Image (cartoon, rainbow, N blue to C red; front, top):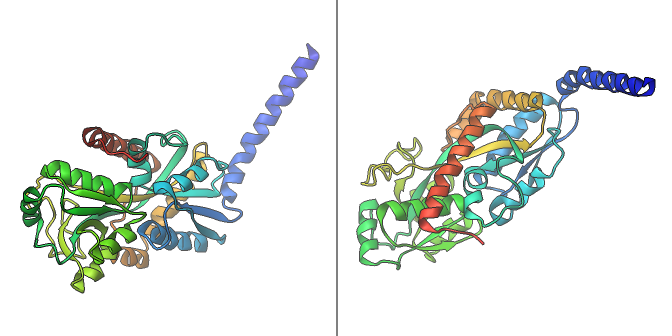
Length: 324
């Protein structure tokens, strides 16, 4: 009995010591390099956000914040790496509405659980797409496109550069009741390039990447996917304005950690992200790239992910969209 009692007391003392030490350890975070995994190619919106915010975090923390691009399988490769990492706040993920709102429905199987294997921290940015066309396509707006597509079902090709743009295309086709030929590309930049070359006619492109081409006359902007016009393309109507009432979709980009990361660390990173997004120079830089800057709590972000998963699961079921 005395041995068992001594063991019990020793266990209690050790547990108390850990609890007492924990706040101190959290207060010292970060004490070494923080790595942000971007599960998509360098040069895209998620990479830009990670680098802009990561630099400011590094300056405030006096610790390196390294951006590590791990593209592959619509973000699955990088997401799996983070899901399997130690939950200590030193490996973070730059997730998107594609990786955490869509992939669970679009892929037959994922090597992780989208909800249970991650701890949401905060969204860094939200941006709509713009539907752009090659100038050779004889359309000036969404109305023209719908009439042409109904006259030529299955003949007009639209590129997709990932799960988010694929589902934007599927949503557009479903709501418009038209048949477009969907052609997949490995990344939105490649999809936009395919339209620039005339290889395909249409794409839901990232606004920041598409705008210079629109201004140069190499692409024609038909409509913005959000519910209101973009401040950087104020003359381009929304798709909803063009006769497709209720059409509204944007891509978000947010920071996540592995599940089990202490809430104190999650909250500290969240507070730092919110602070950075309020800096005038950051707001100006990201506004020029058509980003809106939310200020989510971790719980709000978690609710957004669940809502997105439910929304896109319904569309995937209706359309039969799938990546094998």
